Amino acid sequence: MSTQLAISELYEQLKHRLDIQWLAGRNAGDSYLDDARSGDIGLVGHLNLIHANQIQLIGYREAQYLKQLSADARKKKIEHLFLGQVAILVLAEHVEPFEQLEQRCDEAQVALFRSSLKTYELLSEIQFFLAQELAEQVVLHGVFLEVAGIGLLLTGESAIGKSELALELVTRGNRLIADDAPIFSRISPTTLSGESPELLQDFLEVRGLGILNIRAMFGDASIKQRKYLRMVVNLVPMSDAHFNEGNRLEGLSNEKEILGIKVPEITIPVAPGRDLAILVEAAARNQILKTNGYSAADDFRVRLNNQIQSQTKE
Image 1 (cartoon, helix red, strand yellow):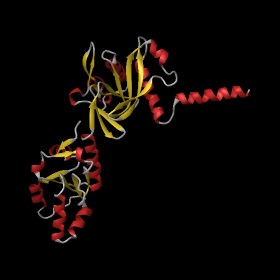
Image 2 (tube, rainbow, N blue to C red):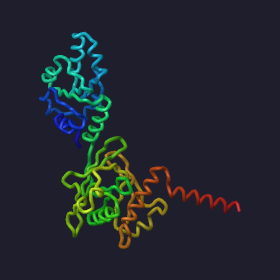
Image 3 (cartoon, rainbow, N blue to C red):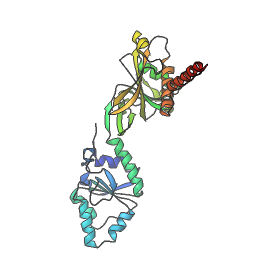
Image 4 (cartoon, rainbow, N blue to C red):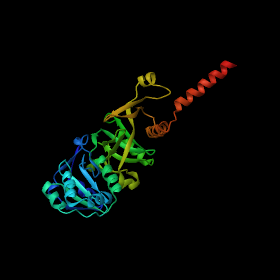
């Protein structure tokens, strides 16, 4: 789980996308933004002289407010910025640094950035970036794919056939995200985002065939960089219990808790002759219907009750 991010790393990843210049405070490059403190101190926000954020944005309006103050009053206001735990000051909309601001940032080891973007654009982009980088993470064993447009994790014991099934799903037009060790990040209280470790990107290991490069074999369209996790499909060996204990209307459905978020899970028994690719695609499409508020099982119950009532009246 990563809860810290070096200021130098943030700059390197955002400098081109957000047109950022590093004006002063280069000695702050090895300092960290700390999500563990964010309950008391905001990570990023507009200029706040009372409860300063770790990243303070100063746009045109904030600059105009400071400029209309007397030199002494402005100096006192700016000094307030350095009393808290501010890590980065960002001047938006090409705002010019105030007198001695660059020198003060060097002394306080606070990074001073400047960007051409609007304040609201910077706020949105930085918030999204930090949500990804500082999110709680977990690595799960399985194959993560995009099936019928939703993120689906195939799980099951070793040698159950996850990789072979994933390969067949890719040949049917679905997309591989990560094999063996997908990384899932909790980017919001209800959302998990999954992606592949850089080392495993594009690769799928299939017993008997070895390592396959899916992108090279099937093209760029066969690979997805990341996706929200919407369901888990657990593969298990077929047994009599699955016939005796299974819910004939709902199937073997459950929920799997990952990083405190409950994800719909369905168990599919594996046996010779079962077309697992079709079953997984059907499970994904059925989950989409459930997400949209439709349940085939509930629909069937309503029809059955209506028929029973009509026969009773007769």
